[in-house]
Image (cartoon, rainbow over all chains, first blue to last red; front, side):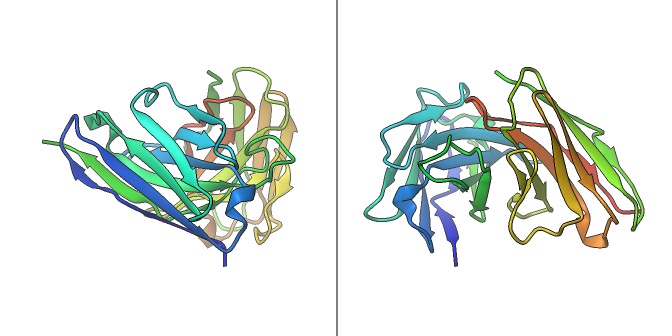
Length: 125
Length: 107
């Protein structure tokens, strides 16, 4: 069964840091780009970042650029999101998701086809 | 950034109805358009990718169409389990962007 399992969320003070993890299983992790999407309480979905299958290419939303870093360890089938200088507006459920296509097509042309259950991040003093 | 505008923002159809949700991109995204369904407290679920390709396991009453800037999600013969919020999302250019969502409440 294809599965993504996030962890690492929690309560952090403004200005603090947190690292989210997303453990993948049931598919060839190293063949797919991965992404993080977040959802603030009562709000819609916001794309955060993506990383290529190899990890050599990354992209970020302007709202997190310079503060968040996406990375992956293909030997451990794990995706990460290092979040620094956290702000109240970063409070959200963070989801990791898998690229529905592989390296032969454009990133996410086939959508985000598998999602984790989400991990909640609360930034508050 | 590419803006995605969905309409309507909410609707309350009856079981058996046909529902149409539209999504407009602020510039052409060809067919780099995906549709998701989200139920409260759960992760989004991919329904349609590449504008019109039905995801495996998704009932055939769901369909997608469009290209360029205008897209449509259609649900035929609406079922009680189809309640939730529907989002379109463009994957043509980063930053990827989602529509604001269409909340579907079964009457």
